[in-house]
Length: 315
Image (cartoon, rainbow, N blue to C red; front, side):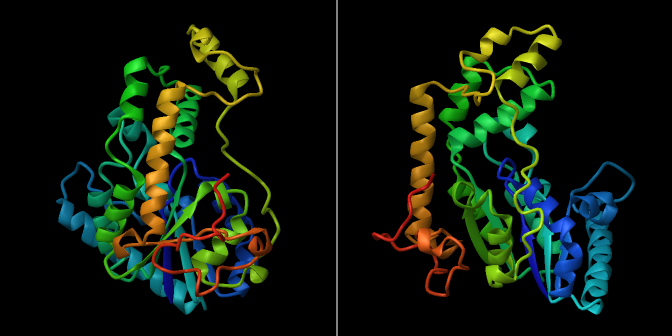
């Protein structure tokens, strides 16, 4: 049985993908594809992978989690599952910590090393979705503010825009934790709205074999300005600090200089991935409108993507 871990990241339509897979679980099972989503991974299955305060040591907690995972993997294999997709963005880290530390998943390496041990080194493929940093941080901030997080101050935005940690650092941490596994990198801009295409990549199956039901249902979107103004007003805050824009517009907390710096960092990340990612990962991109509904061929799934006229610009 092949095992694929989907790590998110957060704010890259992970919830929509999980919703799609959960509602197609019967059809996927018929095709030999199994699915473990957050409803399963967060209900005790992975408890102890990350140590918790208690009378058991971190080592004992991890060993118990590993045993639990192995029992469930064996059950999945016996049920006829050929490919198991485990999707939970919280394995990678937490957006709250990212915002607090003004950094992209600074503890990813240590966390993922423990998850690799919990799966007993059996993970064959790890999939990570990236999003342009100006949009990633804007979405994360909007989601946090709607849930009661304070509005960011100028120094917060400056720290996020000038952060030293980029997606390439996260990719490197993933590759280090899962040595020997294939690391695939997708972009939010190209594939967020097409969970069937993402699943085809994750399972190395033709996209024609993927179910279409629930494939265009987008969940957990970042709230727009109107909703954010209402949330801030309801708790006695100053909605004017959210800036100008219609209620149906996206909140853009960064100024032009900060947004440009974040976009430049993302461009550098993509350049590194297209140049081969130091042999660590494979960037999967659509290469043209004619191939929008096709599963990437073996020639396209190289270590990095070649620069050339066929490359499609990110939306």
